[in-house]
Length: 583
Image 1 (cartoon, rainbow, N blue to C red):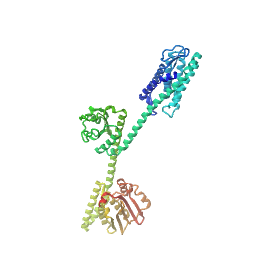
Image 2: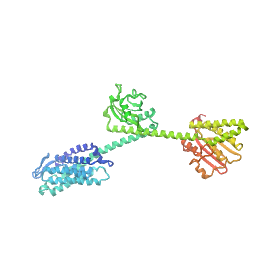
Image 3: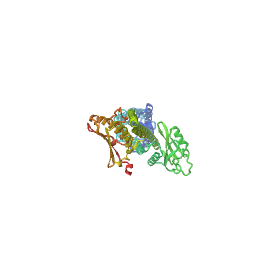
Image 4: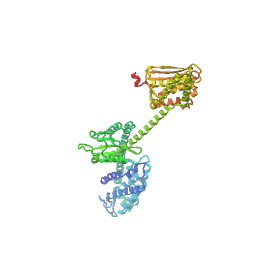
């Protein structure tokens, strides 16, 4: 019966355990990344010490002489002792907080027990302090677990109570009375306190693990949302991207509606109220304007939402800022049927999502700048023209003005056409193959005038490939490279072949010559690093190779084939595009 009576009193354990799990600093006992300060440790000592005192007062007074029991504790006579759960609170303190907190709680509960009197007062006080110290030492050995298992707690609780029985036998006087007491209450107290300690630890573990599980679920949801929204938010904060992201969030968050705004208007609204909270409307709610102005999120009710529709179900909302480069550029608004629906976990999720979306907007801005830098780099490469080429062309024209004015006039037209194509190439990324060939012809007209009869150009171009899109200023540098380096020392019979062929879904374009060729060692380095050009336009093979890869892809980079004394072939390939299919 004593066992049942003591287990009856374990209901208080559930209450205390639940209350403790509500204290933030108490939870930090189980977080290996956080620490608690001296003041918080002292507070824990007091809490568990008071828990031990409560265990004393809810105990059962036992008189081994009269063989009687009293269910409510009072000041004890010399013949009385207490069957109680005092050790339980002290043991839990040691298991959760270590030997310092365990011993401290034991001192509080133990000293109180001594002052209650009874022939076991001193023995029980000493045993209480020892129980807290022993439980703390055992806890320090459980390094793999932040919280000891219920099984370990059961054994430690029973062991601590057994130690108390031994101390009573060794310290309490007279021994006969102490022995009779241990016979009456020893087994019931060992069993009850072992069960109580296990239950206490089990409750704490369950609460902590449930919160961790919920946190893991929320984290998984946040990661899933991040994966789904990244593609859209990388495009920046636009009505299209906002509509896609709002739709995703509406499906993932249990809410009535989700909206995204910029600084002036609603970009999207998905869910209830979409008929009157329409995209494109100017922001009217003061709460949203406040969040945009201050960057501080708000939770608001029906009045702050400012909806004039009586039938509108949107009764509460969380308004979170969307930031980019420390500036609030919009808001994320999640609507609910009442403020009671906005739980702390839901609130944390929405704050987290606003931060996540803000980071994605930062990424979009970085990628935008990177794209602009890439475009600027390409434009710079396209616009390069060597002054040396211009001087040579002008000198050739000057020499022909007297001897052959008609040819000089044609060369001026070709030079004008060449520069016009250069300027056009600097303002657009792609040209047709036909435009590129016209550019090459304007260039060759000038070069052929200088080479006289030493150069013959062959065009082997399939008509079906002439509408294909290629990066602007691609062919002319390849032709120039062939003339300046391959055919430079060719005194006669110089040949330059420009060809284009469609093979399945690709167009292969090749510029080849029968010049001096390139050695294998030099051939391997031409594409890997830029080579300074003294006499050319400055757009070398490396630059063309880099532009092709950046603008089309790795598979479109230049391919070089060369044999000393037999010439060089430079080729690249592009995919068939829609314009070609129409032709």
